[in-house]
Image 1 (tube, rainbow, N blue to C red):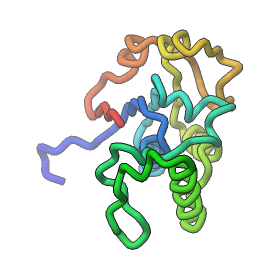
Image 2: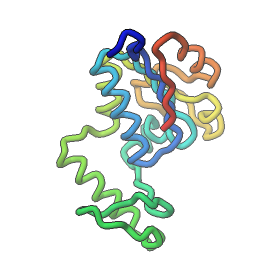
Image 3: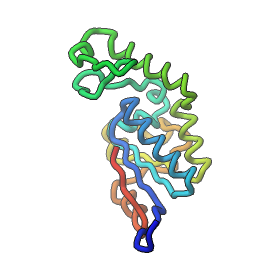
Length: 166
């Protein structure tokens, strides 16, 4: 690190999508931050709320249709039109979960606990909560509060802070 480089002190991560790949990208980055001693605040909005909603967090799926980066085991390209066939998305999601289990990647609820145990903070978006008619009791207990986007941004200031949108 040069004299002009300033260390990263805080990450504020916004998760707006509820697919396995988007939710886990958020959780891995937040957990990695707290493990490195970086302050982490995670804001779940719109379909990202599925990751912190008790009824949905264990039912996340992977995006099969319209995902040009989708790969099969061994790196073969996945023809996205196959994702329209009934049962394919569920099968691909099960395969993803199986691969994650083999790598000992924790489930969403365990990841949330690890992040907060390390000092990270988990928040839900008030607008999205209102849109989906959810309240605090619908959320995992690791969710600190329901905030407006303005309240979240107010927490994101300071030198050495990055806002990451997943």
